[in-house]
Image (tube, rainbow, N blue to C red; front, side, top):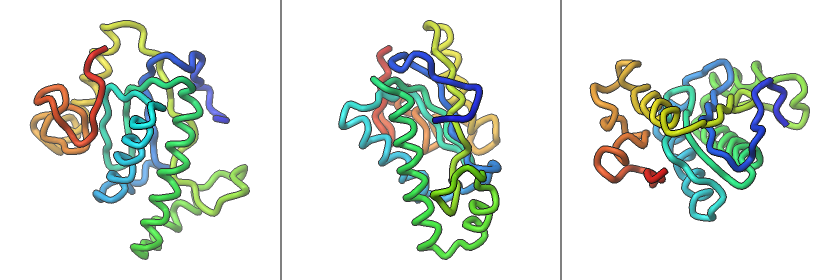
Length: 177
């Protein structure tokens, strides 16, 4: 259960979500953690546990618009799985610096783990109509442009922008909403 003031009050409604690494550490800068995220989202989609409408993975956070029958549970499972796999990657890579950071920033009430990968919560915002959906999708897709990583949204590999502009991307998303 999240200890944040942001709550998913309608578990089956579409929400804009943000998952952030602890202390905004740029752990997602390498392709491997991004692939872990993509593969996890694909797994949830293939089992009809999550519908993704838009996403972007940046170096220290993920934005997505999604819906599920129990969104809190699915986001929790996603964050738990991707954290474990990403920490395993960091261990295999011998990345002592990030592992020490994940240990140092772990919240005290996480007694059953050595590390904390994600900040608590997902800062859900209920999508309340088409105008808000369009605004949030544009925000998501323009994130890498705003950061100066690419000139056009569809040039960012880890985003659904190319799904909307070219009909194909790394992860299938639902563009009919």
